[in-house]
Length: 300
Image (cartoon, rainbow, N blue to C red; front, side):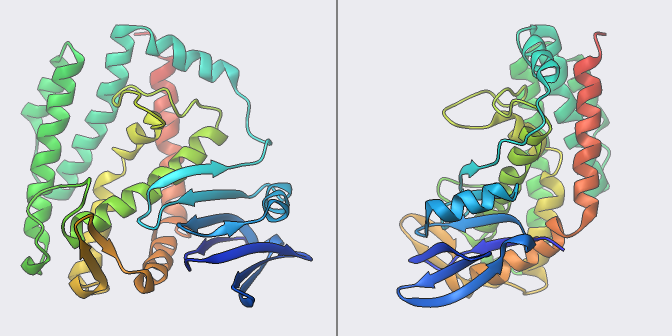
């Protein structure tokens, strides 16, 4: 069975040797992975990978994800055997340039997010959904999404058992407490996976509807993130409430709060088991993409 490989040890080098990817720290081998077992490679921070190793991975139709030590998605090295569905992309562009249909598509993501918040909180947000349905401009939709998010994170805060973690509200750039730090880390990991899935399905990841393009931001991946943000957040709270990670597992600096390197691999294995090995989330992603395609194809 093929696996997701996480390389986290700073200062290591990844090289090809025979039919393996081998990881070295200085001149010592610290890890080796048979290429036929590799599905994806995640590389965090200051780690080198040789061109022969890159070409080797790509020749097996695997992908290489590049992230910062704090999990920020930097880029994706992928093979050329991607689904080429230009009709799907043309449909994306057509709706993007149609103000009315663009707005309707943005509402789709917000409506699904509100439904997920209702399930988590046990609170009906009927008035908010009515406002969304009747909203007539993009700023109104953004305001409704912001109200829903604010309510969600208020409820999420109350679910945290350890109040010494210091979580009061959703904050990032930088994250100042362990909960916000782990939320940002998990969101970034899942965003990178969505980026790859959407690209492989033939979409243009840079054409979105709820989020608007800025810099290198793949806004369609962020649109889809809203459909999973509640589940991802619940996962983070469970990590703390079950004391799998505690405050001492993080380090604090003027640049924010980050998971310590020695705890990074431990957490990534948990994330992999919960979100990658668990086929439920792949099924949920496929379902969300199918619903999105119906929205694209609906001219009503």
